[in-house]
Amino acid sequence: MIHSTITGIERVSPTTVSIRFPWEAAVLPGQFIMVWIPGLGEIPISLSHIGDIKGITIKSFGPTSEALTKMKEGDRIFFRGPYGRPFTQVKGKILVVGGGSGMAGLLPLINSDTVGVVSARTKDELLFVDRFLEGNVIKVTDDGSAGIKGIAVDGLKGLDLQKFTKMYICGPELMLRSVYRYIREIDVDAEFSLERLMKCGIGVCDSCSIDGYQLCRDGPTFSKKQISGMHEFGAFKLTESGKRIALPK
Amino acid sequence: MSLLKTEVAGIYFENPLILASGILDENGYTMKKILQEGAAGVVTKSIGTVERTGYRPPIVAEVTGGLLNAVGLPNPGIDSFGEEIKVALEAGKPVIGSIFGGGVQEFVDLAIKMEGYGANAIELNLSCPHVKGVGSEVGSDPALVTDIVTEIKKRVKIPVFAKLSPNVTDMLEIAIAAEAADALVMINTVRGLAIDVYARKPVLSNTYGGLSGKAIKNIGLRYVYEVKMETGKEIIGVGGIENAEDAIEYIMAGSSAVQLGTVLYKKGRQAFAEISSGITQFMKSEGFGSIKEMVGAALP
Ligand SMILES: Cc1cc2nc3c(=O)[nH]c(=O)nc-3n(C[C@H](O)[C@H](O)[C@H](O)COP(=O)(O)OP(=O)(O)OC[C@H]3O[C@@H](n4cnc5c(N)ncnc54)[C@H](O)[C@@H]3O)c2cc1C
Ligand SMILES: Cc1cc2nc3c(=O)[nH]c(=O)nc-3n(C[C@H](O)[C@H](O)[C@H](O)COP(=O)(O)O)c2cc1C
Ligand code: FES
Image (spheres, each protein chain N blue to C red):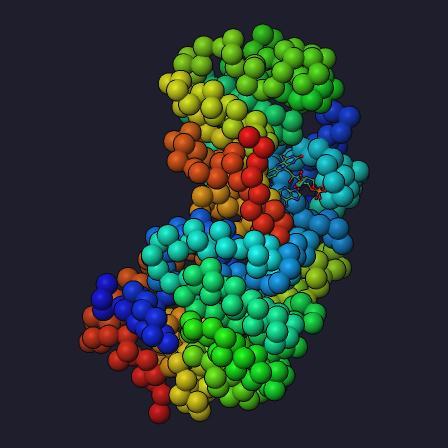
């Protein structure tokens, strides 16, 4: 297990914080670490900051993520990694589409020319909208408290997607599915970062697998073409016990 | 390919490499992919009577020479596992159903259901070292092992493999107790512990775990050799195989086939294709015409 000391904490929404800590490792956009809270649990979290002072951005969901959001400067943070296949980076204009805490993993891709579709349940939960230049960001909220009222895919409808060299999408699987279905017939290159239950992070336990690929090793990023051949994408997942369940249609 | 073919209890394997239980074998699509990518067979994750979520992560620690794991036998329960076997069988290669239980009746019921799903053989996990009430406790009681194996043999037609634990005083005694099995699988993980000194705590949520990988290879080899010599039974060797030479060592110690687990963490799923081609090269350069010729070649 690697450990570091937290040098900075920034609250980025009422439920979400960014934690910064020095770690000299080469990390690429899209990769993740397994963060351990001794005595409590271990969860996969994307690197939202990949310079010398690394960072993760966590939304409080359950016990382990909640404990992380309560950590303080000077506390020790334990983790292993980096793991996973990074996003393929391209020259040219890119579009990032993030749902909820999915924006965390997209943050390292954003530059001054990047266009973003940022979606969340409500206005206060929209993450990192200030990282885009004025006019380069489309906000979408479930409750209509900011931007377009709807889901992430509704933010795409006013854009000419073919003018982007590549799209990067990160968020819950049902959001990814709706975006995938929308862009399926459009001539635009895209990469998706998937989220599934991860227990080991190193390709042995099978809890994160989709169509035989291990998200933690072969992913979590997958191309539009890879997604198109996946029979389990947006359709089935295995629970903590390994029980197969269908995702809502 | 035919150079590599082997047989265990009458089941044909196109090469001697089988996926070990508990590694990438919970989802039918993963098993199918691993078979399509070069494994000759797969053993499913160990399945019990009722659904279990397993332990909270950390369930695995990367340690010197391999992995320490305490996954906690997560499984959907036998009644929900048929679909995964069905998908895995689409690859057209042997699927071995691993089961675990607390007593004779439970094992028998599980074996009958596995056979019903179309599994080509049953592997009895008598040895999982880290769940109270099952595993080691079952596998370290010779009389109970004899009862379980004999009863199952009466009730199913497919071959039955008994997987043994090294966490006992005398593994040979248990191997003899499992006499009625069609083949023995050895070894399961070796009980161990890892501590993070900066956190001042054991790393695994379950504290203790099972050690696998290179660190246990020479322990496994010794057991295979000793048990083969003493019992002559068919054996599937497992424990720390990371390359072709490791696999050949196990074969020369008396294994008719071997299983791969932890190497998938090091090399990914391509470990199967890589090790197969290494074995072929060795056989050609050393003049072996079949796997059979190599089985037990190092025995006195
Ligand atoms: C590759 C990857 C990158 C991620 N990056 C981020 C990130 O940058 N920021 C962020 O806030 N969240 C991220 N997540 C999600 C995060 O891992 C879960 O929110 C977290 O595991 C919740 O754990 P918990 O113990 O706090 O809550 P729990 O009460 O255990 O669970 C809350 C929810 O999280 C899911 N979950 C629980 N454990 C896991 C697990 N081990 N793996 C995946 N999902 C789990 C549960 O199914 C449930 O829906 C990422 C997930 C993956 C797979
Ligand atoms: C993560 C993990 C989970 C395992 N789960 C099981 C299991 O459910 N049933 C079982 O019989 N063996 C289980 N094993 C043991 C392996 O099948 C194998 O016997 C052992 O790991 C030694 O082989 P290896 O060094 O090639 O991994 C597990 C091993 C690992 C690493
Ligand atoms: S999390 Fe265990 S295989 Fe991916």
